Structures are given as C-alpha cells and as structure tokens.
Image (cartoon, rainbow, N blue to C red; front, side, top):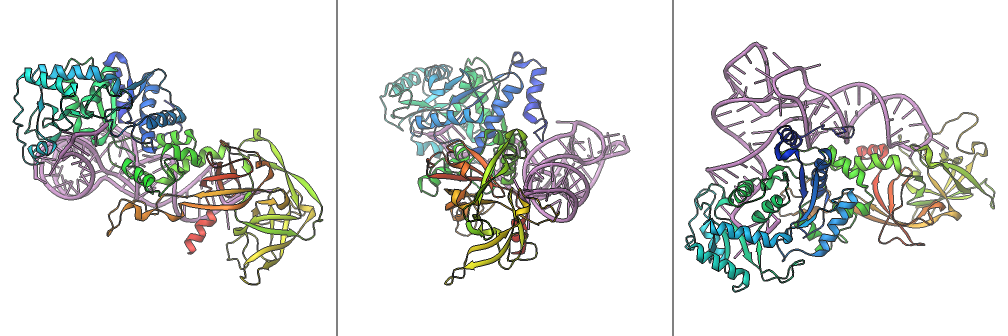
Length: 565
RNA sequence: UGGGGGAUCGUCUAAUGGUAGGACAGCGGACUCUGACUCCGUCAAUCAAGGUUCGAAUCCUUGUCCCUCAGCCA
C-alpha cells in the first residue's frame, strides 16, 4: 500500500482484513464485490464503495466481483447495467471475468428457500401487505404471529411451489422466514423472503413470477461467490443479524463477514438516488450526465478525471461515523491532477476589444508560448499577435480599487508572452456608458514579455488576436446548490429551493486561441487565469465548439473582492 | 420509548495506555510572465462529569447528543 496520496495510511476495514489474513481465515483469501442495483446511475458516493471494494482486492491480491443486485424487476433496466459497467471501467477498475447477476442465482435461491421450508424455518403467509404491517408491532411493542405461521411443511412446500407456478396474484402470498415476531430488531420479525411480481425481468424474462428479497438474496449471492468481506453502508447494520441468520440456516457454501462503513455525503450537492432521479425527471438538470450532477457520468462530462476521483476517495478516508465531506476537497483533487496534465491555452470568455494604436495595421507576428510550465515535455507553440485583440472584460476597470492590479486608464500591464501595453483611452457606448473598446499602445522593446530596462508590471493578462480567434460557447459550471446542506429543514422549503441558479452560465462568442480550432471530445486544457475546461462530449461540433468549465483556478483576487463585498 | 451504531481542529481522518499527527478549508508571508502552481509559517480538536493509572482520546461508571430500523425497496 502506497500512502503518498492518502491521508490515512490504513482504516478499520484494512485492520479487520489484515487480522483475518494473519489468522489465515478464508485460507488467506480476500474476495470482495461491488453490488449495485441497476435502477439508477452511479454517483460519487458509489465511487467511494467501488474504490474500497476493488481497492481492498488489489491491495491484498484478492478479487472483486461486479454483481448486479437485480431482484426487483419493477424498478430495474438494462439501460442502467450498461451505464454502470461503463462508469466502473472508466474509473479504472476491472472485474475481468467476474461479472455476475443475482438473477443468475434465482434457481439456487429457490432451492435454499425450499431448504428453509423443509427445516420448518419459513412459511407461506396469506396476509396482505397491510395486515403484515399491522402484525409487525412497533419499536417498543412486540408483533403478533400471523395466523398462517404454523402451516405444515407439506402445505408450505405446496403453496410455495404454486407461487412459483403463477397460481396466485401479486400481493396475495409471500414467503416469510420464521424467526421471532417479538424480536427487538424489527428486521428479524419474520422478514419477507419472496414476493409475487408478475413482471417481466430484464434478464430472466417471464421465467419467474416470484422474486427474492434483498436480505435473502444478498447474503446467499455473497456466499455462492465465495466473498470473504461483504462491505456495505451503515444503514444495513440492522440487517446484519438477518444476513447471518440466513447463512446459518441453510447449507451455504461459506459465511462471508458483513462490515458496514459510513456512506459518503458531500456538501453543496445531494447524493440520494431519489433526489437525483427527481432532478432529472423534473428537468432541473438536462439529464443524468448533466455536468452539474454528482453522478460519475456527470463528473466525466464536466471534465473530472478518474485519477482525481480515485485520489479523492483515498483522501476522504473510511470510518463508521456519519460525515459530510467538503466539496472543496473534490475541487482540490481535480485541480491537483489537471495542474500537472492540462495544456495551457488562452481563452477570453467575456471579450473586450483592444486596439494597439501604434501597431501596424497589416502586421501579424508569431510569439512563442509555453504549453505547460509543469511539464517541460509539453513543449511550446506559436501565438499570432496583431493590432486588434481581445482581453477579458474583468481585466479592465475604469476606476480601479486599491488592490486591482490589472488594466486601467494610463496603466501598463503585460500581455502574456507578448508585449507590455498601456491603456490610453476607454471608448464607451454613448447610450449605455458601457466600455466597448480600449485604445492602447505597446512597447516594441518588450517583445516576449520582458522589459530590457527592467521595469515591472503588476499584472499579466491573457489575450487573443481578434482576426485569428476561434469562436466558442463556454458553459461555466458551479456547485449545484447554494446551500451547504440542501436537506436542512427550513420553513416550508425543500432541497429544490436551494438549487443554485448560477450553477450554469452559458457564454457565447468566447474568443479562443486558433490552436483550439480542431479539438474535439476528450480534449481538456487550462484557459490561463480562468480555470480548467474540457470539450463537451455531447454538444461540441467542428465549427461549433462547446467547452465546459470543470473547475476554476484558485483565485486570490476573487477572494479579496468577496471580502470587500 | 425497544434494538443496533456513532461522537477527535471549521471539515475529513490518524493516534489501539506513553509528545493529540496529517489533509482540505481559513489566515499571514516568500516566489511568480497565470492574483495559478510551489514553498514557508500560522490558527485550530479528544461530547460531559466522575473513576482506575505514574500516565487516559484510548479502560470503567453515569449522563448528553447524533444516526438507523416498523417496504411485499435495496
């Protein structure tokens, strides 16, 4: 285990695994699994689980299976299984030949259920869902036995077989474990094992009309696959006694150990499947892969790299206490990665025209620019320079405050890799008073960006030559919510009331360096001084470039402005 | 209120009876042809009260707070 990128060298699950290994439990084998239900897209919270499960397998030279927990045909779909596989692969993990579906185990699961019935440990109940609920009791009061609890084994066997044969309608019968209706853990009050669902399954078709419940399926699937450590989130802690009960009461091949850890929470977003579905369904975002979404496909389209997400998962650590990780850590992780790898390029997002009055009308020259100061191997490129340029509108102020270092009337600044220029005049729209053009002069002696007389400027600006510029649409993305905890209870408000209207700002007519003319999906770069951007994989076309802002650069000036405000 | 879990800097996470450490965030500074990066410094925590001990985040007692369970969802 290398711990160069991790804040915690080890965590409690590693401690358990290492102790097991030392005791030669499971013959010294480590086998984990990632068991998604194909009823939604994967998000950053799943990434934590994926990194954990595949990571433990890798660290201890074991295996990690990908298993679809597809026991509820009313909610699941192949659309999701395909997307999930794509996302896991993209994150950098591989299940090799170990792709499984709980539905592949339906026949064996049925046999285990029969085994339970034969042992007098399961029974068919004719009660309705409502009646079962009424019999369950409450947190403080014991439940009542179902009148059908003591049927004979023969009768149960017959009924269960007929359930399978399709003789009964949905909801009329269920198979229940016979445990204890007075158990202090409600999960153990004769839990339902099978229900009737006359619904076509995305893999088994119409072969089955009874489907096993999670608690029955999961532990047995784990056992069938020889899983050693079954890692899941905290809310399943209550289910662990049942996980163990099932495995203890059938002839299961082995008894994996369920270990629970705290799921990931991130501020300024939501990670509940229900809410994510709602955002998509109600059109608050453009889809599962909207770059504002915390989904893996959303993050991918936003420009996050698999490495950055893996590093993030490494850094957040693992424990049993509920916690909320700061979005700033995710942002740090992607900046850290992109800083090293993203080529630097100049892009003017909100253009302000600049005319260099003393530069010849018909002249163009080429200036050399460094592609990535963090990576000497990235080389250099040529930038065209001419009399008419664009600079960032925010880089000019007519009446600059004290700490504003950029361009202002009479002030000299550097154009990156080019010349020092001095602002002579700001031309305004006579009606609106808005500054529409700057008249400047340049110092020919400062070619390349340094003054031979040694004089300094306080700012370096990015720019693009107007006649050479490539037009593009740029989508500025920000945090999905403007409240750290969108779920916090507030007077008649829900999380949707805290959706950040500025999470997406669309800019058109942005002016980019000519070298960007031919880039396509997969391309990412840093627009110097602005942030990291990538080509939108869906909407960008040759001649109609669309860039997404992955994340801004850290910005000391923005921070100063915020403080002043 | 029954059962099951959990409480360490603002946030996340180490320390398993022996100096409460790291990361992010914040603040200050150095450097800088990106107000970026990098570097340096700094702020800052053991839920509470008792007890055991030479010594307690860690063990014991009592209490407080938080999460979770009453789907034929997973």
